[in-house]
Every structure is written in structure tokens, then in C-alpha cells.
Length: 396
Image (tube, rainbow, N blue to C red; front, side, top):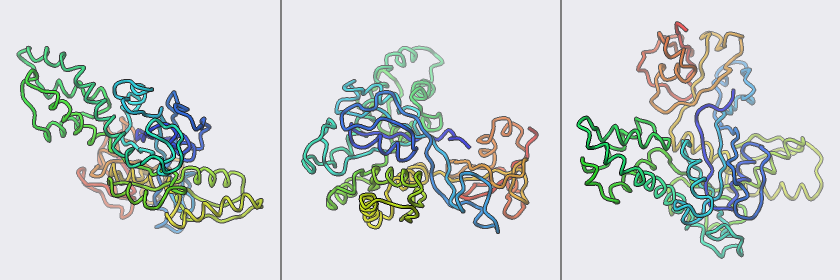
């Protein structure tokens, strides 16, 4: 199964390790360099979040290529875009290109150089010479001001539209904001939260900025990956954690080294595991390198890369994994494949939402759903939960 509509974006200043993180998470062949703007055109790849497969509740493991002995890897899109520099919302660096590329991301992972070895512009400096805590608010602020600039730049159009007798401010704002990747429900929820003047010509810059900040927080939540944690000072990691919620220490280089060692048959390792097993011949240098990574994994319960991806999807976005099947007894599709697909849905989704996620025709023809675990029919407004196995009955 390929990546669905869920998309994560890697953000941060140049040289923080975004491209290394991207390569470690996707094994895509991208350029990695220690100079600003290594990445110019956005890189798109498929990564995976990790969860327990429902086949663990059966006598045999399932047939999906994304299930590894009961560990299920669910594909999502990962986007690596150009590095961000101060003033990006005003067009500095590749700012506009960077921020526009984020418009369709569901959540953002801000990759921070926790070692303090790069300055605000992404230029190498002596390790510890720069305080990485400054980079935590930096991405959020640039995104907020970028979105505020879009609202401000289109405001005259909204004001002109308000002269029409059938003008509806909420409709006008919805049309404007869905153009930057916000869904209609998210815009509606934001407008219910923010106090604002009814007449567009009465709005101030502060009103527009407040709207932009609330919408960004709702539609583009941000997780901090404290990268290069293997060479960062422990007190720096703690200060990063104290500065904001959702901070995951990580070593993207360590994860990439493990993934490459798996490819050569040197080790056994699944992304997100707390340790690895050596199964092949290693040189002394390779052995020492892997042991250094193991030391970090023992301290952090893994390399942190998979943890960051999982936290973004299952934590920040509050998604669940649901498994659609055609045969509720055997948990198979029409070809007899056990648990072939996994679908990521927002918490609170119903069987109808699952039907539309599988295919719009299935949703249009939806009749009812069956919980494959107990064979019972579930109501149309039943809230699905993590690991549900559901049969959708449809006319299509």
C-alpha cells in the first residue's frame, strides 16, 4: 500500500540534518551536505509510522509486506524542503518556496541541531557556540508570519467583496484559507475560537495575525526533533524540552547508519527498535561505530527518528490505524490476503469515514459496517479505535 493522503514535512534552518533525517526515514537517495540550501526543490518520499498489527491477536501473522512479525508499518508521505533562514516569510533565502511547499502538510517536524554546531543561518560554528533553543520558536514564527502575510495580501479582495449584499465573511475567509491547505472544518473551528470584527474594513493587522496564528496551530502542529542528540550536551536537550512540548531527541545519522547496515546484512533491526543484533561480519571500525550508536539508543530508547514520526501522527495529529477487510471471519480481502491494508484516520472517525478513505465510490454506496473482531454490526456513528478491523458493506 502506498502512502495515503497524510503528509508530514521536515522544517528547520539549513544544515540542521533535515536531509539526513529524510534519507534515514525513507532510504531515498537525496543530497546531503553541510552548506545552506543543499535542498532546493522539495524531496518527496514515503516513510512509515509503526504500530502493533491486529494479527498479533490471531494464531498466524498476516500477509502484508508492511507487517514484520506483528510490527505494522503504515506508509505516510514525508516532505523535505529547503532550509529556513530568519526573514523567510519576507522572501529571504528560499523562504517563499519553502513555506509554500508546506501548505499541504498535515504536521511539521522542526529538525533542530541540538549540538549547537550551526548558527541561525545554518552555517557551521564551533559546537555549543549557538543556542539551539532559539530554533524552537523560529520555525513557528516564520510559518505564522508567512500565513499572516497571505491573509494580509488578500485582504483588499475580501474588503471589496464585503460591499455585496449577499456577502458572508465566513465564506470569504474559508475560500481564502483553504487555498493554503486548511480544510473547511478547520477554518470554521478557527473562526469560532477567534474574536474578530464583522466588517472586514474594521480588521487590524493584529486581527489578521491572530487569525493566522490560530489557524496555523490548528492545521500545522509542530513537533521538535532535537537532532544530533548523540553529540549534544545533555543539559541542552533538557533545556529544549523545557522550552516547548513535543520534543524528541534523535540521531538521524545513527538511524541512517543502522538502515544501511540492515541493507548489507550486517545487523537485524526494525525502525523504532530500542536495540539491534549483529548477524554479519564487521570490521573493527564498523563495530565501534555501531556500539556508539547503541550507547545513544540505550540512553534514548532508540534513535528517535521513528519516535518522532509516530509522535507526529499518533500524538500531534491524534490519528488511529484501522484495517478494512472484505471477509470479517478471515480478515481478508477479495484475493484472500490477510489484513492487506491499513488506513490512518483522525480520532473520532466513523465507519462512514473509513469507507470514503478506502474509495469515494465505497463511501457513496455505504450501507453498514461490521466489527470483524466479534462479527457484530456497528452503528454508523460508532467511533473507531486503534487497531479496529472493519468490514464495509457497500453497494459499490
